[in-house]
Image 1 (cartoon, rainbow, N blue to C red):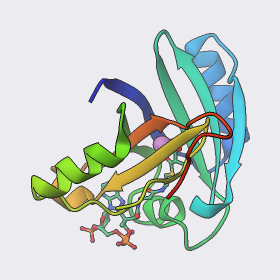
Image 2 (cartoon, rainbow, N blue to C red):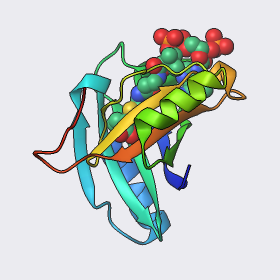
Image 3 (cartoon, helix red, strand yellow):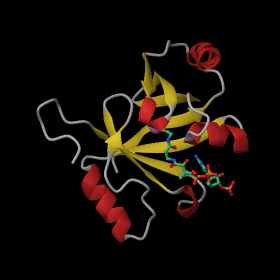
Image 4 (cartoon, protein in one colour):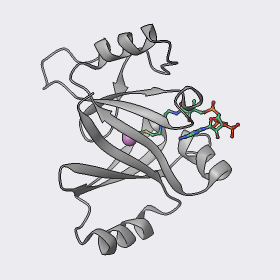
Length: 141
Ligand SMILES: CC[C@@H](C(=O)O)C(=O)SCCNC(=O)CCNC(=O)[C@H](O)C(C)(C)COP(=O)(O)OP(=O)(O)OC[C@H]1O[C@@H](n2cnc3c(N)ncnc32)[C@H](O)[C@@H]1OP(=O)(O)O
Ligand SMILES: [Co+2]
């Protein structure tokens, strides 16, 4: 794994949290993106080479909605950048981790993503992130 690509923070109100993080970090968010397949609306902030992803649920049954209901607002996941997500999934399965997505799926900010079950990683939800190939190249299998 190369670096921490982003930290995901679950929030109730994306607009209010955008205003808060703009004040906190001194920079505006650079993107808002909805990922319907995950039931979320996200916004992104840059912190030097790192990123913060704020996530608001758009669907009552989504992972973010459930997390907010059970645990309230806070850090939801750590995302690691990887060069080859398929190879990394295979390696982690071999190592005995419970990988929730054995086939990478579309994430936000032009990424392919996969998640690891948090009960097997010290209670922390881990996301793997690979830059999505340019159009025309092989994308999802
Ligand atoms: C925008 C796209 C993408 C990106 O590009 O960056 C994203 O970041 S999407 C982020 C949202 N998507 C996901 O989180 C997908 C992965 N998560 C899941 O598939 C599920 O949330 C889950 C981890 C499988 C859990 O769901 P489920 O099994 O349906 O039940 P519960 O919600 O009740 O949780 C079971 C158990 O796990 C604990 N839990 C849940 N989420 C987290 C978390 N983020 N960190 C730590 N622990 C978590 C939950 O509390 C339950 O434990 P107990 O409370 O002890 O029962
Ligand atoms: Co994320």
